[in-house]
Amino acid sequence: MNIITIEDLKKSYRDSEIAVQALDGINLTFDQGEFTAIVGPSGSGKTTLLNMVGGLDKPDSGNIIIGDVDVTKLSSRKLIDFRLNNIGFVFQSYNLIPVLTAFENVEFIMNLQRVKREERQKRAVDLLEAVGLGERIHSRPSKLSGGQQQRVAVARALASHPRFILADEPTANLDSVSTGNLLEIMEKLNHEENITFIFSTHDQRVVNKAHRVIVLEDGKVVKDEKVKM
Image (cartoon, rainbow, N blue to C red):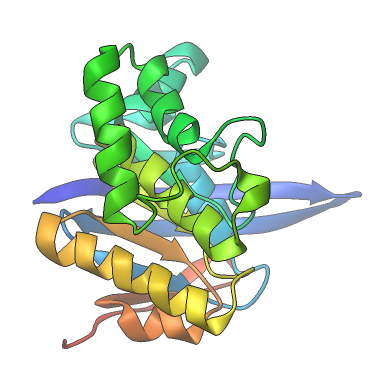
């Protein structure tokens, strides 16, 4: 089932007096249950594309349709609500709230959604157990390794029951063991629960796990292929 449609997406930025074309007419669709890696050299438009799909930035032109909603046409207030209830994010720098425990970080987004206390607490525990952190739920980020913090970030991304998860360079700050553990968890969630993951990455280990690889260069799609698993 198609969940994202991107139509002729364009975005440019000004670098001093020069306009830099970050995205130049992107057309893509994504289906439920995909495990997709978006790759390309620095400056190719990977992060910009994820930011557009995630509603963190606005395109100059084009459309992004998620389900039956064109998010490029939403007001800022409605876009915030739509992101909260439809999109999960995993960032390179984890972006956990340092004064909150792992449990509280995962629970936080459900607080914003006004989920009942008993339900959100149970889901937070269940998700942390699913990513292998059942014994660290009361630890703050400073007491967790980078790999553990990123697993909390994955649990947090899942907490809102999103349509899909956008992961921007999620393994960039991790060692090989942590990367392997994180990818194993994400792959398991994809296989067993049909959760959609879309990665922006330079990491060949992520690419090797992907079922679909999209290559960007100079803001254009130059290759889009499905990988036999």
